[in-house]
Image 1 (tube, rainbow, N blue to C red):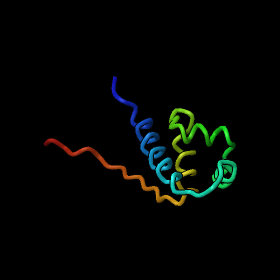
Image 2 (cartoon, helix red, strand yellow; image 1 turned 120 degrees about the vertical axis):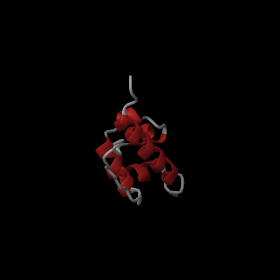
Image 3 (cartoon, helix red, strand yellow; image 1 turned 30 degrees about the vertical axis):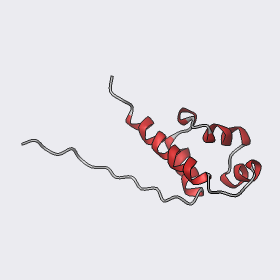
Image 4 (tube, helix red, strand yellow; image 1 turned 180 degrees about the vertical axis):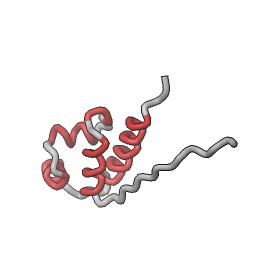
Length: 80
């Protein structure tokens, strides 16, 4: 079975968010409010629970965390 590419994108986005949040000088309640999350959702985020978040939700959190998000879509190279 092939790896889930959407899950891989979610994990990559989550890792970037977690790294960014380490630099925030806020209490957990303040951070949750800043990100528009409940404290329990912030806990899931900080624990790296990628399956708990949609890719869209993670992109929104990343943007709120002052990260730049880019998506590149390309065709596979032809072997002709």
